[in-house]
Length: 463
Image (cartoon, rainbow, N blue to C red):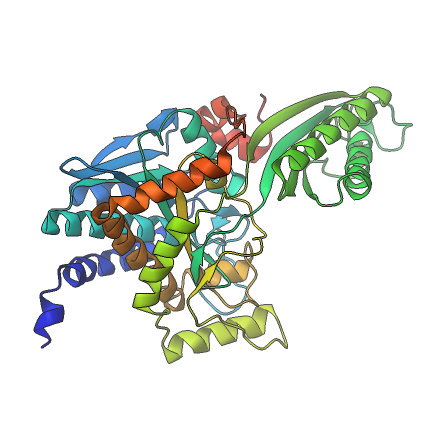
């Protein structure tokens, strides 16, 4: 027996919480829920935090599936941990190496079954260690719904839920393991509703909502290609009829514009709105833009990023077993036939380049220093894909988020023990935003997503 390890307070705190984190990985994965409908997922995490001495406020910010959990030791800085727990529609899959649907409406194809337990578990371990060591400060956990539509944290930010937090810590699965201090994409999102006249497909169409919507999609693609080439435009037709012989009365298109420059991303979205209104008017079709949300990409914070990297480096990379590797290789063979598995097995600090995704905590990072760590999945396993759901439900996926959780826990204690790091991070943030008018973050669909989220997912919502 190693007495040094046996009596190490950090080791004791971590070993106590690790099995509970792993259990929740599985429970969250088996019960996927759509954004703003995560009633059981959020309750499971909130109740777990309560059993570890956290005072929990449910329905935080007026959002039914949000919560805030607090545990303080004396008076000191406040370290926030973000919890995500929503799943993606249509991507349910068994925890197997092949496409094997479960019939569930959603699946954890972004690994949020890991993020909630890992980050909440990190908060529990950090709070326990602070209490043991007599380190003053507060650990606060923010339960954040609807990340997949980049909505939840914007709603909570507007409601003041993040007020009083000095530093925010979070984690996510990706294709590399390490600490991040680099930007990701800004994202603007809205649904366009076109209302025309229903009729028989054999008749001459007038006021054809589907035709107008298709023209708008073509125009939006042209606008971005010709005027905003740096912007990635994405769309999906949410209501577009059921058969060719029925001209639908209503058609809906959900658009997002994505880019690294926030203003350009917003300008592109605004140009699409104007073009859609013009095309609808010319086609004799009514149009309604239903705004969803906007978020900036991450504002890098080197101070927090380097602190996370130092801690993660001391812990080392994820400890995958031979069985874990074998499962991932089988999964790669099925979802990317002919590919050789590429898995990042190092720990690095990422402070150059840009990330391809958008995050609603990007908007928060412009107001509060935010640090994030990633853990690696094989590069050949696509994110937002059935294979990511499969891996998220298998034990092979656990070493990465467990490493992330332990890194966040130790970093929180280090920040509270050395508050000068927090001061430096705040000074860095202040310098970066100097002269920038951030304004109030824009948000739509609040009444719908807090009172009738099913109508949002049924594409019948009205705003």
